[in-house]
Image (cartoon, rainbow, N blue to C red; front, side, top):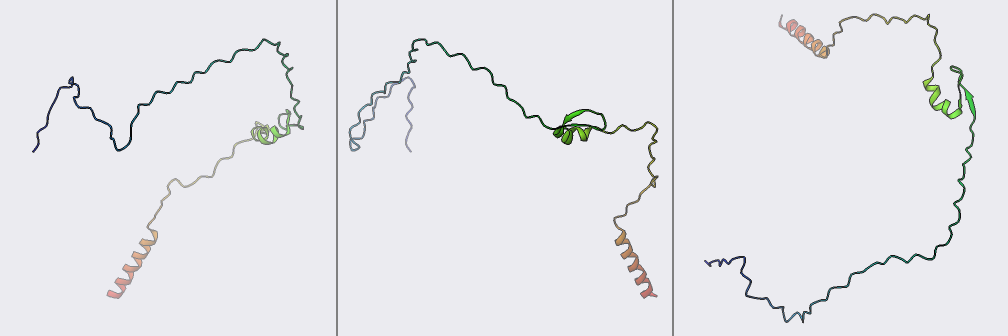
Amino acid sequence: MSTIKVSDIDDEPTEMHEPDVSAGTVEPQAPKPKRVRTKPQPKAQEPLPPPPAPIEKQRKQGKMTTCTNCNKELLEKTFKYYHQLKCKPKEPANTQPTKPEAKPETISVDFNFHRRAQKQERYTSLFSNAV
């Protein structure tokens, strides 16, 4: 086996690797100069034109309708898609709420109904054949 040679970190390497001669000559490359952007020189101050007046958009007025329940006047689309669904007619206070029908308190759910019927048929047939 070969032995490993240990050296201190502070030691400078004594051997310098030489470039491969067969690959050609290696020339050190000079660093490229950095691009420096300069701020453009401001031109002579020209008076700026006054800003244009704000343009007001003219909205197209839709058809107006009146709600029959609350007598509000709304746009047709607002009434159709929102207000009509939310606004309910006024109900008189004298109406009595209807009572729901009484349902049986206990409900039995039997998932094995068919199996029980088949077992019962088997037992009856076996007992009838045995006698």
